[in-house]
Each structure stands twice: as structure tokens, then as C-alpha cells.
Image 1 (cartoon, rainbow, N blue to C red):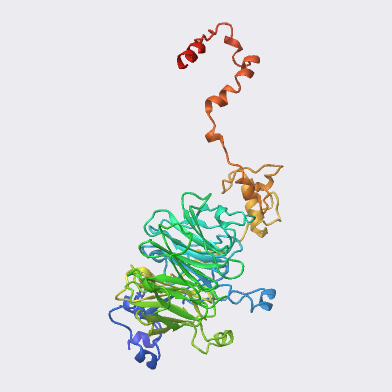
Image 2 (cartoon, rainbow, N blue to C red):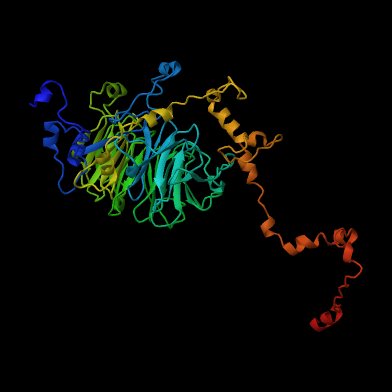
Length: 565
């Protein structure tokens, strides 16, 4: 020991350089807890698959205020007293119900039952894992499904409404597709859906083409450039009483030659993309239990493999060449409708999530270890590996082929990314080396707004910062030179306040009468004012006296009639 250090004196001068953690130590911090010896010995990780499960990064969605701590754990926001009394009903409000990655694997978009959609960028995040954009795409409606286009420029958002919305990569709305007429019985004659949407999928080979499924018993094919009407309507008929059934899922195969749909009556349907869609090409009745929601299906890479995930707690493998009975069945209990299933990028494994326990009481007690990720063999759906992740249950699973990482959305609002330090490419590996940014005094100062009021200032004693956000925004818009560029709203009339009154049938009435100005002949439109201009020449009276008279050739029609005879 140094003599100066023994007396509590510094042994040197200058700034002490802190040792930066190495990349290996960063990966070690995010490494998930290993499985129990019995589980690990019974189901070792396959070497050929290069499964990206050694490490994880927890991406908490947070509450409305986005409160997330630096350790990656979700911070519970305080609930009002009336919310605490109704806690049992709101316990799944933050469940991640939709999840999608762009084709490059650089961005994640997530949707939840709390009406929010969040955008995450791997390249711009550190270990604090905060989204760069959070918005409500459909007001007070939960987000049901999300899907990026094949090139990643835009993504579709499906919510509890009957209108699909299109957003760009930064979350700006580009289009909202039309809603159908709810008073028309025949679904083929409506321009859009009349029931709540349940799913969507892009055509992998046709540009700007996608499909949507709805509770109105239809699957509709759309063109992204035409939001006023769909291209084709597929009406799904049920043998149950009423001849209608809710379509809970829709999707394309890898080649885009087949469209699949799952219904609440337990039926699976397959249509050829180039057919007339009068009846399905392949159909299986009672594929899953009636009355349950088949949350997801997936096509294999080979084109004939098909897997379905039912709300009855089963995963079934099908062969489209013999689409009558399942090839194999596996148990996968879940408490949440809408749990999906997917294939691994090489098609060797079937991946899905489960919920903790068979009942909600066991799930809350955590007796089964929380949500689990199941890797099942493609041939017979035997369990290859079981990964315990917690989080009350796994609703969404996405295995991205380019970055080789698994993204899981949980019922408690947490998103977990499983990656491998050696076999994965970018993705979560871009966030781990950055660590967590230390907050500076500027960060605290920006969050603390302290207004300064001068004695001679007009309106002294009234703090505009205490105003509600809407009133403050309206005041800024009305002031000249404000930060917004909203046009001046009408003072009175139907547009007062910048909003025109709307009703439930207003959008239908707007599309009943088509604008015919494009079909009108411009010559006839001008000549119908010729008599008025001749009788009351307001604009041409200055040159009426010196204007030459038009002389037209007189055609004798009698000679033409004699020649024809």
C-alpha cells in the first residue's frame, strides 16, 4: 500500500480513468438464466439450427408515460383509485397483441391492448431500450395486427375498427381505407369491411397488394393505392346457423399462390390466389374446437407444410396435399386468444408461446414458471426445447431470418429479444455495446419547467403552464408566429372549431353519389351557356359591333336522302 493512501491522501492527481466494460461482459449481462439441469439435459440446443437463445434483451413497453428504468425491467405506473378497484379486468391491458419487424430487421413495431403502437430502432437504442415513437393509431381501440410491406417502406395497422390504416416507417399516417355499408346484407356489394378487423397480410410477390380479415365473415384483397374500394371479396360461408362466422386470421404462403383463413367455427380454408373465390379449394371442418379463436397459422418453406395454433390449447401440423387430418398434434396451453405460431427460417422447427399454468389462478401464482417458448420438431411436433421467459404468457413470436433473432411479446407488456452473440447479426447486438447513457443535468433541467413571471408582463399571475394540454395547444395555434402551421378555422358554421360534425352514416352518404365532372363533355358544358351569353353579353359587349358574323355552310339533306334511296 502507498504511504499517502494509508493516511487517506490521494496518490496522484488528474481524472481517474474508469475501465470500460468489454463487449463480452456486456453480452454476459444480458445472458438469460439457464434452464434447470433436468430440462437442459432432456432437450439440448440443436447445433445445426444455431438457435439464438443464449442471451436476451428485455424491451419493456412501459406505461402511458413510458417509464422504464435502466436495468430493463418494467416500472409499474401508479393507477388511480378507480383503476385499482377494477384491477382484475385491466390486468391484461398492456398485453402485446401485435408485433412485426421490417425486412431488414432494423426496426420493430409493436401494438398493445392499451391502444398504443410503438416504434423501436435497434441502431438508435442503448440498453435503456426506449421507443422513438409512440402513438394511438385508432383512438380507443386495441391494436390487433401489424405487418410491414415486402420492401419495408410502410406498415399496415389493424385495430378493433373496420378500417385498416397505412403508416410510413416513422409512424405517420398515409391512408385510411374505406368502411363498408352496414345496412347491405350481401357482403360482396360493400366497398369495405363492416365488422371489426382481425388480421392482415401482404402479398409477397405482388406490389401494393394485401388482404384483411374481419368479423363480418369476409377476407378482402386490397390495392394500397386505392383506398375507396377493395379489389376482391372472399365471403366465408359457415355451416352453422346464420351462415356467417368470424375470420380470425388470414395469410399468404411464401409464393403468394395460396390464401388461408381460420374461423371461429373451427374451420380452416385455403383458396388459390388466381381462382374466382366462390368456394375454397381446400377446407377442413372441426380443425380446432368450435367457439375458440385460432390465433395464428403459418406456411412452411416447402409449400405443403401448414401449422395452426388454436385457442383450444393445441398446435396442429397439416399437409396441404392431404388436407383432411392433421399429421401431428401437440399440446400448448394458453390463456390468451390470438397467440400465434411460426416456423423457423429453415423450416425445421415450429415455434410458439404458452401461458403459465392451465388456469388464470395458476398463472398469477407463477407455479408453472411464467410464459414459455416452445421449439417443436417439424416432423412430429415433439418438444425439442422449452425456454422459460416469464412474463405471464407469450402472445406473439417472430423469428426474423435475416438477423437470426427471436422476438417475443408478453401479456405483461414486455418484449424480449433472444439473440446469439456468435450466430446473430445486428439487431439487439447493436444496443448491447452502447450500455446505458448516464443522465446529465441538462436532462433533468429539460424535464423541469419553471415559468418566470415579470411584474409588468400582461396576464401576470396566470401560469399558462398549468393549462390543460389542449387549451395550451389551441392558444399557441391562435397566436401569430406560433410553432404550429394549422390554418385558421371558421368562426361560425359547420366547420367551427376546425371539425365538421359526423354521424354513423356520413361516410356512406358521401360515397352514394359519384362526382361525374370527369365524364362530362367540356364542349357541351360550355355551349349550354351560349344562349345566356348572347342575350346578356356582359363580357363581350365591347367588341360585339365589330365582331365578324360566323357563316356556316348549309347542307341540303334532301339530296343525301335521294342517294340513299
